[in-house]
Length: 161
Image (cartoon, rainbow, N blue to C red; front, side, top):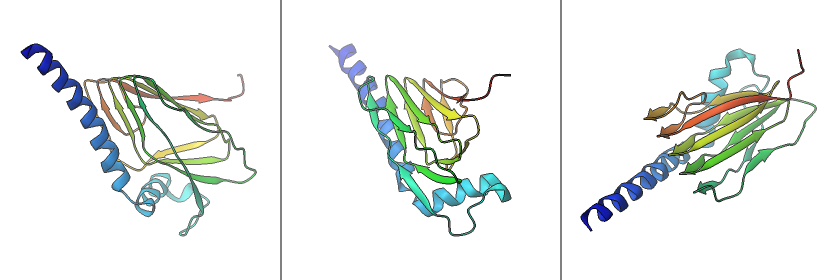
């Protein structure tokens, strides 16, 4: 019985860590998050000091259940997109960022005991608004909170060479 309680406690602790990471990421305001991404891109971005942007909502996935997130809108001009925190607990999650003119600012990614894949168009840009932490996980391609898992970025839509 004691082992069962300890196992339950560990499971809830893992879920709580994931949710705390998402809460901390959400606490960072839009302006601060965008400022961090624009700073990461340096003078290479076309948005000026008062950028116009849109927000992409993500989902919470637990045990692989929950909606997927994708941005398939293709724009003719550069588009700044702030991506709200993605949370994945004990499963697999995928975020598709497929606008070739997209400048994607990832507020944060929280991944606990699972895998999160980000599919990024070959010509799109991606920056993270937050620092990263990895505990018992794979090499992060994106800054985020990862506990016993991995976050990867795969370039898609690239011309064959």
